Image (tube, rainbow, N blue to C red; front, top):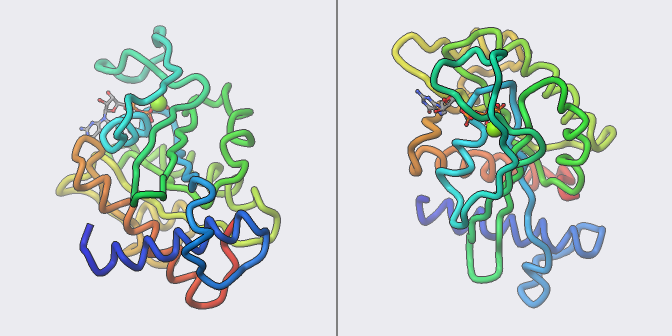
Amino acid sequence: MRADVEGRCIAVLRLCTRTNAAGVTAEFDEELAGLEPVKVVVTGPFGVGKTTFIRTISEITVLSTEQDISAESAFADKEETTVAIDFGRITIDDDLVLYLFGTPGQERFEFMWEVASRGMLGYILLVDATRPETFTDAARHLEFFQSARGPRAVPFVVAANKTGAGTDRSAIATALEIEDPESIVEVDAFDRESVKAALLRFLEHVLGLVEEGTRVAV
Ligand SMILES: Nc1nc2c(ncn2[C@@H]2O[C@H](COP(=O)(O)OP(=O)(O)OP(=O)(O)O)[C@@H](O)[C@H]2O)c(=O)[nH]1
Ligand SMILES: [Mg+2]
């Protein structure tokens, strides 16, 4: 991460963990920081690369609940699908830990969304840039996770995986009714630096909301 932004993101994460602990927004307090881990959900339609994203960045072996896919798979090279949750971890600082929770992509496991969303700071919504149908599918994810905390803001970024020369961010923005296509992050879920950059964009977004006075913590 770029050092300047990293410092600011650490500050906001501390603020969020402090807020989580007390239930109210409080002044940044180093003593009380890091009481709770920060939970970020990685969600999106079937096969967009959620498990790959978490495996690429996690410092622990990802606790995955995958099972073999049967003939229903649309992917020749995809052998497994998440059936409950993926769990990974990144240490941001000595006492600050980011926990990543990946949701299952198949519709029949949508009941896991509610479980995954509990206590989250926010989420990364992944789409597959090569499959426009995932843009429209993702709209349902957006609707669910945006309302997970009632009327309160839930920070998120949309990340387009498997991008290439033909990637059209405005098509994704249109499907998701997002005003600014530039806010959509292009990511390569196989690449650690790229995944880090996507997480950083998410944290910067959280920081922006905090700075404008929006209460974002859980
Ligand atoms: N080209 C390319 N392929 C990718 C990338 N990320 C993931 N894949 C492939 O896309 C397929 C799906 O990846 P997963 O990580 O299993 O996707 P998922 O979203 O967890 O899938 P479900 O849990 O079944 O919803 C696999 O075959 C991956 O190898 C990427 O950045 N580029
Ligand atoms: Mg998966």
